[in-house]
Image 1 (cartoon, helix red, strand yellow):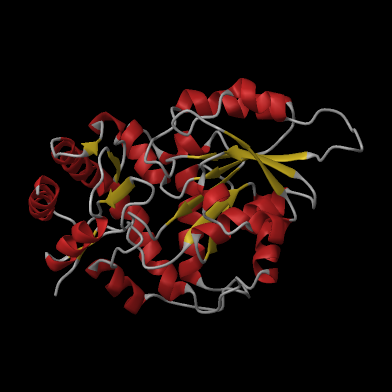
Image 2: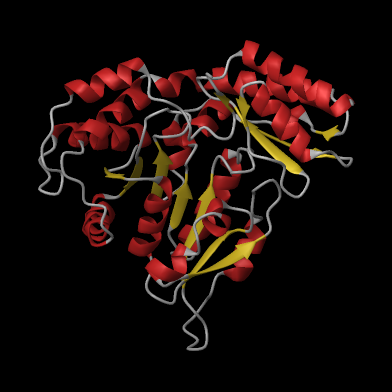
Amino acid sequence: MQWIDLRSDTVTQPTPAMRQAMFDAPVGDDVYGDDPTVQKLEALAADTLGKEAALFVPCGTFGNQLALYTHCRRGDEVIAEDNSHLVWHEAGAAAVIAGAHMRTIEGEGGVMAVEAIERRIRVGDDIHEPRTGLICLENAHSNGRVLPLSAMADTAALARAYDVPVHLDGARLFNAAAHLGCEASEIARHADSVMFCLSKGLAAPVGSILAGRADFIAQARRKRKLLGGGMRQAGVIAAPGIVALTEMAARLDEDHQNARYLAEGLAKLPCIDLDPADVHINLVWFRFNAEIDASELMSALKQAGFLANPPHQGAMRLVTHWQVSRADIDRLLEVMQRVLSD
């Protein structure tokens, strides 16, 4: 069966152009720094984000945690939004790798109020207090919302006033840029370091990028090796990343349009609470306002050829990507209409 996979955009298969690029890629040993395809990808990524340098890393969590490990001293405090990926979905790695701990702020749609951030920044040198080592932002947020540029600018200005660096978890940075109608560099300029994934909506099979100042990336490169992230003939996996940036980033709005189309259809179904205006990118979150038979729903979806993650605490997420069409969405809505109307 040819599955239509709506669990995440991490499930995307590489495009034919990516497969050809992998086949044709010139390679070297990246630990020695002589893989030309990795070098090309890193230079392209840095230029695209308006940063001095970039580093190819295995995945987004690796990139985020490498950023924390490079920015922070052991015992430092990291300010982050309470529902961010760094807090919920990275296995407590900040404590294990960087020796830092998270101080969270409940945001509004993923946006932390500047006043709330300022109240949590440690001022002075009280021996009882940890040092504020980093402020982390996430755009697009894992709740599917995009932070306004004004909110990022305000946070960046506050951070500069207190001499605290800012890291941006931009796993879906290019989705955020597509929603805002701006270049990715316009978002990245508000952070000292930026991580983005090549392996989500951009459809590369593996890899992420960490970008920032040249001296920061030099330190991160050494720590990438320490963490076991030094790769050898990595050009074969870097090559589809180049296609991701040069071709796939430009088509993300198609996924967003399909997500809104899906959201509008779901909003009409019984038992579902969903405001399509809350769907900014390719993530469609919704809640069930009545008891449903989740096992029946998941079984019906699977029988119809759809893969999806089951509801969790009354909420469910469906994700569009380059391998999900309007016709697929129409069939999905038919299945859900049938099950939820029983």
